[in-house]
Length: 442
Image 1: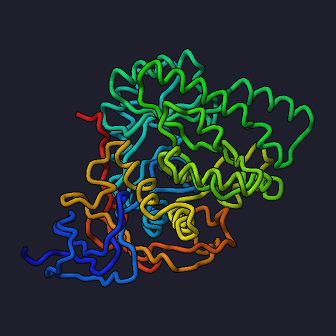
Image 2 (image 1 turned 30 degrees about the horizontal axis):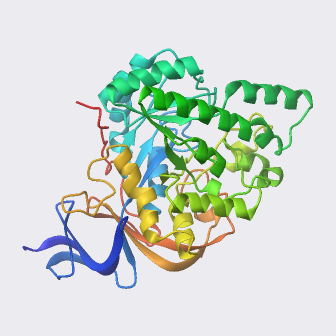
Image 3 (image 1 turned 180 degrees about the vertical axis):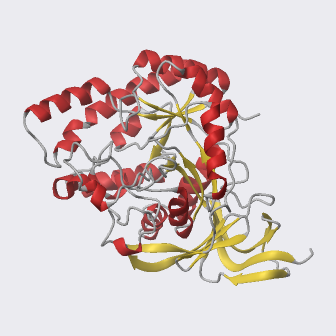
C-alpha cells in the first residue's frame, strides 16, 4: 500500500459492533484501512490509550441561520460541534423554515461558505401543504419536520392533517420527524395557568404536560402504523413516552438523561424547553439511560436550540424562547455515561453516529468502513473536566450542565481526513463543510 495521508495509530477503535486495537489510515478524505498492520503515512498521530471513533452525527440542531443569528449561526454552531467531536449535523431553523424546494436551494446557496463541517437540512411540513413538503424531500431535504401543536411560530398538525402528510410522505418514501404535544391540552393548560396569574418556572411542566406528550405520541404512532410512513419521535422525554412509540423510531436528548423536572423551579427560563424535563427522581434518569442502552431509544441528538442568558432574561417565562444549547456537551454527556457503566462505548457510537447516519441516509457518515468519509474523533475516555460557561463555543455562552464534572472528551476531530479541531481549538474554517442531499434527491 503506498504512503497514505493520515494514520491514527495504536488506539482502540470503537464501532457500534465492537472494539479492537488497530490503526486507522486515510487517503484522499476517505477511510483507506482499519488494520493491525503499520503503513506509511504523511501524517501520524499516536492514539495509544485513546479511543478512535467515527465522527458524531447530530441529527437535530437549530443554528438559526438565516434567521435570528444573535442566538446562533452556522460558523459558531459548527465550531461548537466540531470541537465536541461532531462532524455532521442535520439543521432546521424555525425562524425561517425551509418549506419548498426553492427555500432549500436558497439556503444551500447561502450556507456554501458558512459551515465548518458537512451538513444536511430538514424541511418543515406546513398543515394542508403536504405536496410542498414532499417536493422539498425530493429536492434533497433529509427529513420532514412536523409539529402536532403550534410551537416556535410553526403551526401544528391536527390528526387529519397528519394523516394527509403521512400518506404523501409514505408514497414518496420520505421520513417524518414529529414534535408530539397535543394542542388542545397545552392550550387549555395555558389558559388555566395564565388565569391564575402564574409566571413561575414551575408552570412549564404543567403547561407542556406529560399527558399532552403521551396523547400526541399515541395518535402519531397509530397514524404512522396505518399509513406505513417512516416516522421518528423527536426528543422523547420519559420511558413512558418511549413505550407508546412502538412503531416509530425514537430520538431522545441528553437533557432527558441528566436534568430533573424540578430544576425549572430554580432556573426558570434557563430550563424552558419542550417537552420539558420529566424525571422527578434519579431513578427515572436511570430508567432513561437504560432505554438508551437497551435500544428502546434508537438514537440521541442535542436538539441544540440556543439563546443567550440575556435573551432568556428578556421577558417573562411565557415570553422567552424555548430551547437549550447542547451541541457543545452532548457527546461528553454520553461518554460520561459510558465511563459510569450506564452503556458501553459501542452504544455511544451507535446512538450518536451510526444510527442517525443510517436513518437519514447520510452516505459515508457514521462509519469506519473502507471508502467511508474519514470523519474521525479521538477520545480521551479518562479525562475529567468541568463544564464551564466561559468555555462554551456556541453563541449561547452557557450550558445547563455548567458546574458538572464529566469524564470523557474529544481531543482531536478530523473532517474528511483534515484536522478540524485539536485540544479544544477549532482549526476548520467556514466553508469546509459540504451540503449532504437527502436520499430522496434525484
